[in-house]
Amino acid sequence: MEALKGVVGGKMLARMKKESVECPVTLNVKPFVECFLCPNFIRRIKGEVHCLGLNLTRQ
Image 1: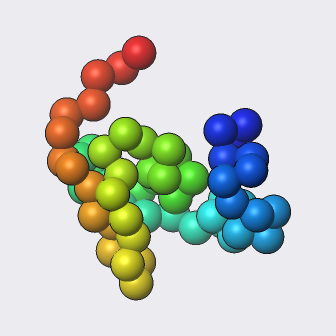
Image 2 (image 1 turned 120 degrees about the vertical axis):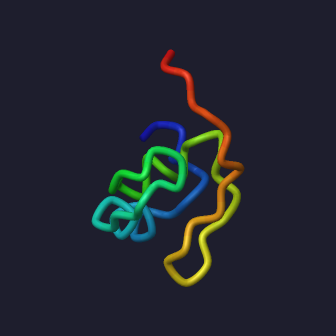
């Protein structure tokens, strides 16, 4: 969450925490904040997530 401070406003961050999306890589429902911080994330338009689709390695 610290990475988002200064990037998005408080109201936007609160709204992002409440939303969930289907991850195109893992095919699971995830909070949008987690998706937004993913290195594969490109954009989200009208609820549809666009991402690079590369495999994620656990760190």
